[in-house]
Image (tube, rainbow, N blue to C red; front, side, top):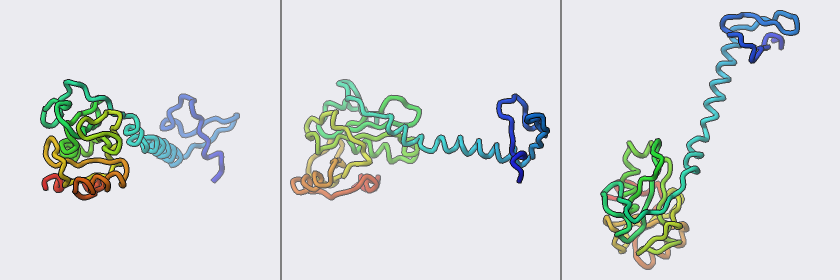
Amino acid sequence: MPARDLIHACGSGDNPSEKASRRKKGRLVKVRPWTLAAQAALAALTLALAGCGQEADQTAAHAPVPVGSHDRCHLCGMVIVHYEGPKAEIFIKDVPEPLKFCSGRDAFTFALQPENARRLEGFFIHDLARTDWKKPDDKAFADARQLHYVYGHRVPGVMGNEPAGFGTEQAARDFIAREGGALFGYADVTLKLLEQ
């Protein structure tokens, strides 16, 4: 196929669908219809690929914020700081502020609902390897998807048994040695597990 058939005068202001030919250095160059279709497909592909990393960028753009003294749990409405145990924050699509939760259990219950799971952009829980249970430090919020969880332990949570998150597997195993329970990954924390 001759290169002259692929010439397209970008920025000329001409509508390619209205003109079947173009002038290039004094020559008349024919633009074939399939070439226009290929250019349109290439433009569409470029736009689609530009959005591929968008979800990862949105997650990285979100960061947990300190829990305020009057913040209430998005699920149950309780004042978050009045209770012990790890807290959580969730970012969902089209909501600029995080939804805050008095427990990881409430946060997972919310995040695992199908209508919420598809809008989930960020999920943070206190990393109990970096803070204590009684008064967790907001500097210890961690990406919930990266933590190791202990469930079925003896430490009472504000809303019942709490999926306790740890930044390292060893910290989770040390907790199990002291308080019992079983080790789970993020994907293993399901609504069915939380019902037990």
